[in-house]
Length: 283
Image (cartoon, rainbow, N blue to C red; front, top):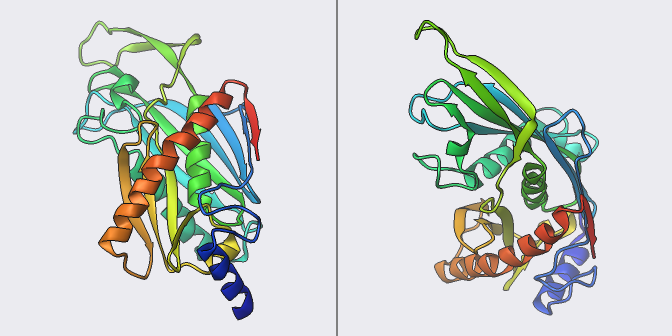
């Protein structure tokens, strides 16, 4: 916990656009990103955003589509918070926070009723309409928490999905139409996921009169409200949710969304330029 003097010092710094670590209100901390580190996963990424450290793995499995979207696959999110990352992760606290993080990722990737309106085109995961599809399981682990975990998880998720390939499937119809078809999974003929429209989460927080991104754990003690904005590479808003107990003036909310729409594509462009190398480090 920060002392009252420290809180005053941090707040005054934000008003002057100078933070305790030297950043301005629109700068992210240093980023280190590695992909393909988990060979047992279909795709993976580890991201360090300052001292915040997260690991994301993607597993693909054949399954059955839902009745309301028979021509689509599906994607599921789960976030586990290591008790070593923060004392508040002990017991049910970690489960509740992990569920909150997973819900934020799910909202950002919502594909709509058709399956085509989200970050991933879920119709591309269909194998046989109404019978067989690919299911994506995104499992994340928070290894260390020093603020802005939700944004770190979303960036790592986008990187892990970029590292994920979907095997091709040959389907041979059974002699009896009522029987399940025979499937042959061809791992050597896999297709990489298209992450063009996959958004990232950008949390814009209000500290006094200043609006800032990528708050550290200390800085988060100074804010009463934040807007979590999912934005893609084109600057389109994919989801918006409020965090914190205080209300947000409509004019301030519009300014927060505009800031996310401006900064989000810039961050995605930097990340995407490095993804093909399998690792990156940005100060």
